[in-house]
Image (tube, rainbow, N blue to C red):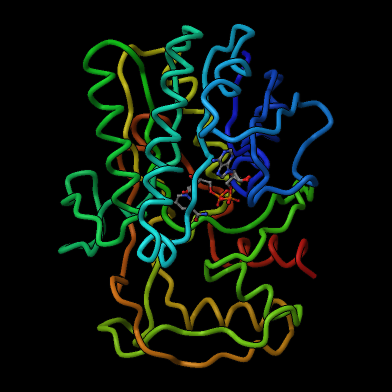
Length: 320
Ligand SMILES: NC(=O)c1ccc[n+]([C@@H]2O[C@H](COP(=O)([O-])OP(=O)(O)OC[C@H]3O[C@@H](n4cnc5c(N)ncnc54)[C@H](O)[C@@H]3O)[C@@H](O)[C@H]2O)c1
């Protein structure tokens, strides 16, 4: 198939592109390189440097008979979204509307979208399921939910067929070492730990150790990026075989605390990883994990690499 990938030079997009190529698909990557890296652009892809906010360029780039779009391009820094919400409305909401308009012009009906666990906010009950309340408590999460609602409507109106994949915390790197681009100025726990282990950052900040969790630090569900890539390939097949759209939670089913992840990282990297406890960040949930039950049922989702040690080991292989 011919797949158009926005944000394919980024961390998750590049892993998915690698798997699409392995399966024999033809891939075009459209990326403005704001956080993507050249290292992530494989020689086999057609690369177009462009911003999804440039409607004309985006629409021209989509000429060529694409079968589906995978839409990763977005801003994802939760803290920044609270300080500069307009930037997030523009990039994540207007940008996605532009993608949808270009798809309509080029008669492309299928889209797979990177949504997030952030659409749930602070859950009342764990594990999070698709029945949990959608109540984002940061602006980033709101932009993802807003876009999902647009998709839901367009799908009802028969305009598109979509998969909204709500990732929990992505981590790890391709176990065969084929994807090696490092994230620019990452904010998530795992790449930050890696940067401290390599000496690029001074210390890890642990935001709060007085939560009602096993050791007081926040608990999250870490999902290996290769398992995420596999879920994208399977979701694409699902959209091809069925007429309906798909909304899925993608996690490993297991919660690890920040302190546990830090401990495992020290053991695996054999490096000093200095850490400092600081105040809680407003809007952080104590714990967030999912059972991905529907994903297991609908697309036969079976995470293979998502145990915390494999996630850390495959990351360290690249960062060290
Ligand atoms: N990393 C996670 O744990 C996680 C969790 C949930 C959801 N997501 C979502 O997954 C997607 C990919 O995340 P990632 O971790 O790979 O981030 P990333 O920053 O590595 O990748 C985003 C890519 O999109 C490109 N981009 C951004 N704005 C653009 C624009 N306006 N026009 C064209 N290209 C643009 C960037 O250059 C980059 O290559 C995002 O939509 C993010 O919100 C990520």
